[in-house]
Length: 351
Ligand SMILES: *Cc1c(COP(=O)(O)O)cnc(C)c1O
Image (tube, rainbow, N blue to C red):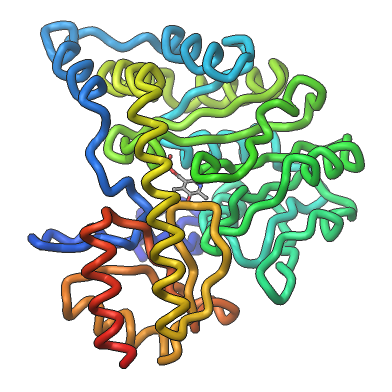
């Protein structure tokens, strides 16, 4: 608290990211990063762009990258917005599209950045409880609202809804924006991008941080109708005209051009997810069926003590203190070798 702060800053409750400890030999399963390095083609593109041109500002509208993403998803470049991580894209969506008189709706157990943005931008919100088994039932959102946002798959549960269910929601909810945060969609859920063609109030947000191993480059994007994208661009150009640096733009473009790397790694994550889920179940954990690159598991011993016992073995997982999930741990899917170490450690801890 400082007397130099602007009004309201003392009342903010900032988002707390998963820790990034500086420890060697760490098995880091706490922030849903990709366990493998990015594609060699991405690294080569970054090296090729690291030269004297860095003295020049980057393309403020990232046109080449937006064309690449547009081609990949079969939309027009005018329907693509890019930002410095999808957290920034989401921030602009909250500011540009989701601030209205009626409350914004999102699940009670979900990405904890949503209430943070609501407080930052002074947006009224209501949290809609997930069902007992953590399923997201979109009929529960049939009420007056100034917008709806949910991740699909949801975080930290990993559960997904179908594209048909999202389309039905869009048919019932035509007068406010629906944002689908697809940070984890590449690990087995159905993307809502094809619905954008017929639903001008749908915004789909994705990131290169998880399925494309580029958390360190900070690139996210949104796909929606031209009108929604123009709203985001107005906020972006009132905030930071050059959100993506030169290296991020070429890295992201190269990532979309290496489809073989993308398919190989996402299939490997899904195969390991099945194996880890099976092992956790055998060890007495309750495991929520996941379509993401993590699983939410309730161990047969107190979750925080299991987390501490894993940490003593240099394995970091994520625990949330919200009442409905405080008995659970969110575990990112690692490499097969990391997962072997995790399973062996849990065999000891839960014995
Ligand atoms: C990781 C994550 C994001 C943000 O990713 P960026 O690294 O900012 O692109 C957004 N939404 C959800 C649900 C996430 O888990």
